[in-house]
Length: 205
Image 1 (cartoon, rainbow, N blue to C red):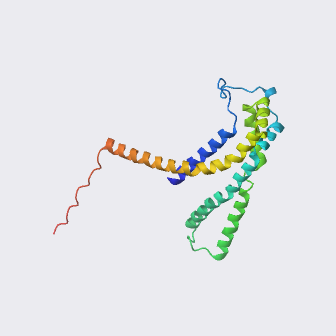
Image 2: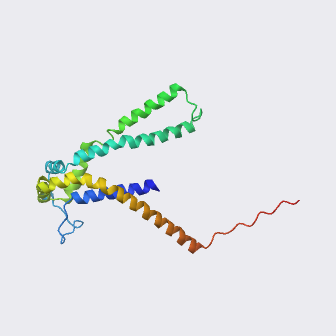
Image 3: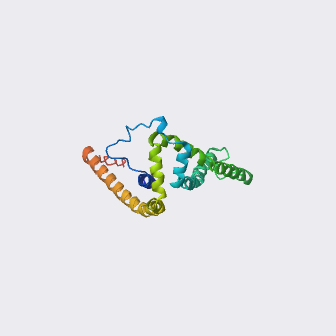
């Protein structure tokens, strides 16, 4: 339950940060229906410049640093499963087998650091941004983020997200618990009281 709530909170923070960083379209124009013609699409170089002023690459690199730690827990769980299914049995591995197991685990943790290189992430982002932003859009956004207010919001966003996270998590946990309590109560009302099993028949004396 807690892990689910925290993941929702993290998603909300990411969405809030994303919304704060992205320019809002004019009210009369729907971004869903907007089509950017090929000549109006920004170049890769223009978008790389945009990502630079928005400090996107350092954010991605910080995010990727969390991958090995997350993977390590998964690999440890897999270690336990393999040991349980091993003919020798869990906790019965020889020191040599244990050392070999740890070596394999370290190898895959190292591999995780290059699982999704930053350059590949940038290339994937370029293709998406080209479908939604025009050259003029990108020029305007770059100008904003190079301005004093733009630099200030980039400085403040991580601090604001850090302050918001505990409050969001606390409220989500409390409201999630309240929702589940109401759900259980309503199910009880719909299904009726639980059946009481008949008393056990005493053995013949």
